[in-house]
Amino acid sequence: MLDNTAAAPAAAEPATPVTPAETVTTHIAYPAAAAAPTQAGPLDIRYDFNFGARVALPPGRNWRVRLRDLDTGNTLFESKNEGAFVSSSKRFFVRFGIEVWEGEESVFTHEYDARGREVLIQFPIGTLGDIMAWFPYAQSFADKYGAKVTCALSPLMRDLLAPAYPDLTLLDHDEVAARKIAETSYATYSLGLFFDDAANVWQPTDFRQVGLHKTAAYILGVAPEEIAPRLVLPDESRPIAEPYVCIAVQSSTQCKHWNNPEGWHQVIAFLKERGYRVLCIDQKRVAGSGLSWNHIPHGSEDFTGDIPLAERARYLKHAAAFIGLSSGLSWLAWAAGTPVVLISGFTHPTNEFHTPYRVINWHTCNSCWNDVRVRFDHHDYLWCPRHAGTAQQFECTRLITGQHVIETIKRIPGLTQAA
Image 1 (cartoon, helix red, strand yellow):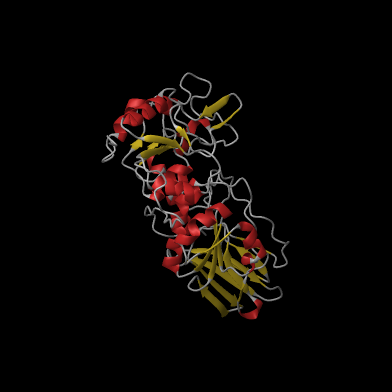
Image 2: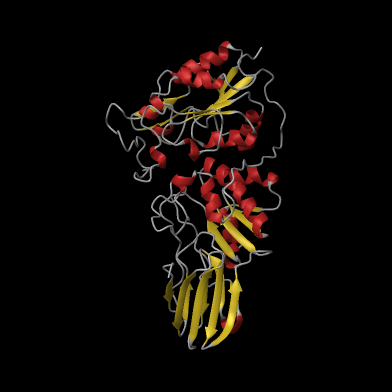
């Protein structure tokens, strides 16, 4: 057997919320699947593919049930029982086959086929970059498997993405619950960063090995090709007549910041000398925790605040460039088609989308985020797993110089001189 599938009595206890291995993006449990499988077979057999393959066999008969992986040809689980609830251990996409016998008679066979069926894809709330990175793969899933896909995501992301994806149904999580989508879905898949999923229950491969965005492709069983999300903005006009560059300096933990104390000032001075306005488009002009706080850099113009994402994208669309970190606004800038100068040392370049203007210093400690031997702690604002409390703390970006970033900016076609 290749799968640790469990069999339990058909009269199982009501389902409880499904809690994936802790993710950095959700901090909450995804809602449970329906207590009973949603699809009806013969002889009161119920089945579906919500959080893996599920089969409910009514009590009082002599059953034999088998789960197969149709693509690999492997038998994952087989059991004789007099009534059971069978659930696969794998919660990511597998093209399952289900076979049921009563005694020696084959009474039910089903091969996964999502064509024309309702499939729910759940996205975490409270994050920008992850959703921008993952969303195109929901469309890829719908295209490949012909499913009627509903995406559960935050209202802010729904409003930004819905105009560009008319073939998908985008709902916030409360709407999904109110419409009882889980009660009818043929299959459900949950996207997240599953740090502690050593058994590969929620993801077929560790996201740190394949990249933040491509992990969604592996979970959904589609090609892990890099795809920028589409944007259709309500207003695509140029917001500022003068040439300008957008920057974003804030992020959720200190290791994500550009920790060189002179870096932003040098870059801003370089851009302004060449005739560019420099707009800081972070949500917050000051952010941090404890004794560590990061301020909007001197010389930049304050465009911070709770601005709609579509308006942020409008500014990015017409910017000569965006300069930022491994954070959400970099992913939004990529979607807007803006040249992105991405400064990061704690992530490996494969973690983010490809940009020819990626900045990393290979002479220092780097890429701890993508090191499967260390565990990111989102409760520790000063997380630095290899050098915390030493002179080397945050050297991955502290030793990225302003000159390094400026030389990278110079390679952007047409950006050296604004006028």
